[in-house]
Length: 144
Image (cartoon, rainbow, N blue to C red; front, side, top):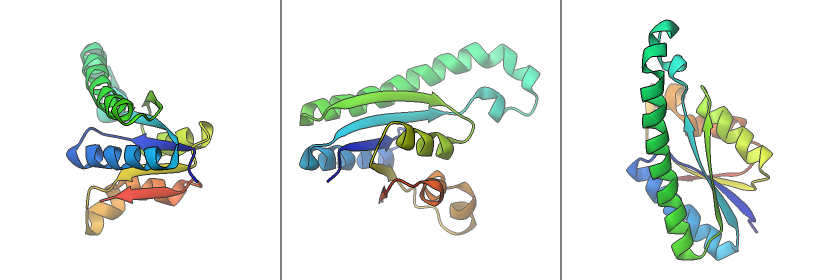
């Protein structure tokens, strides 16, 4: 059925639960997984790009540390279950695009990701999961 599952994570508790579900699904289907963290470039978060210059090194170090934690956690869980796991970290100002592009470019046939349960306007405007659902040609399993 599935041969290569993409597991994007942001390290949240719900995302961790989605990762466990995705790993179990991979185990059941004999699929391999790619765990993905998408970080936002500092200049995308700051109104004045010149102000970012001073903090860029600190920001990159913090992002690298957190990303490594998230990916190591998924990789350890996958290894315990006997599932082949590749990890990937991408910097992109639009996380949904990075997820869609990664799924396509790496030949994934399923994306398993969490929904953070946003409702109303927040869900419409802020949900990366919704944006992935809207733009992906790869099937998406939303864990909630």
